[in-house]
Length: 300
Image 1 (cartoon, one colour):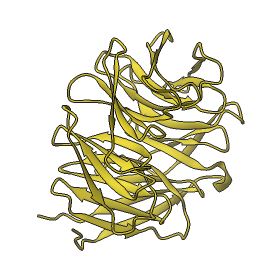
Image 2 (tube, rainbow, N blue to C red; image 1 turned 180 degrees about the vertical axis):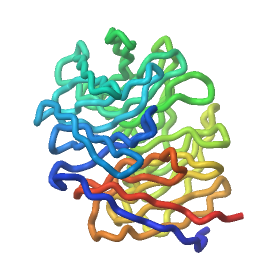
Image 3 (cartoon, one colour; image 1 turned 60 degrees about the horizontal axis):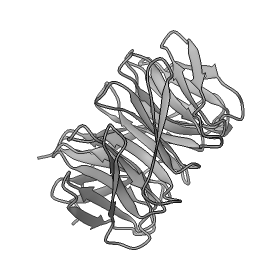
Image 4 (spheres, rainbow, N blue to C red; image 1 turned 30 degrees about the vertical axis):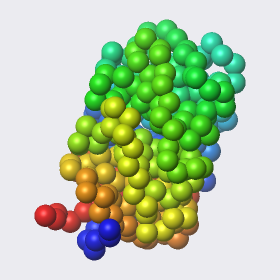
């Protein structure tokens, strides 16, 4: 079911568009922090619009970034196989998982006070403390390609298993269960805890948004454009917003499955990460070189 609503979209170009904005999050300092996957950098967009850059190893491939419970920004360095921690003052620490070539990607804060991350290359889930101590946990199947991860309503960690075509649940002591998706080759990627206590996810291979409850019940909602390649998803109020990487759009789905989508101003801008800013707007990382602010109209 689709609906018609309006949004205001404004783009903020980064200093070097070729650096490739990818992940984005609201920081504890009221700014937006984002990864520049091709430039090996972390960026900060101040509320007034000023952008500052923190440089990493140029080939590190920073991907997902999120605020930790310790007041720092945590991020994955996918190509350098490290987890990074950056304070709002610019202090940097980097930690390598025990498994070589692990390929860390998704990252989130857990209910236990640690950060949890996925290892695409190793097919594992990792846990890192604020001091940098890392533990890795295996999955029930090989080649699962765990992607995004988030804390669930049950204090467990939930993740998308992209190549296993499943949503996974891992207890804090490392026991994992996979819930297979009804649609073949759906290839789930993005994942967020919804306002209804369920987990909502994107199916990049099937062009659908999915929902799974803590007891494993799954629903799927086809998008108007099944070839749109939905990527990231985030909760905002009583709805969820997602990026359509292959269609140059952002979309919204409410808890009844009603969907509307909106074209981005710049063609082929490759929207990836999405977050809710302190201003209440959606902010989207466009890999071709900008951050887009998406301000929805209010609706009943």
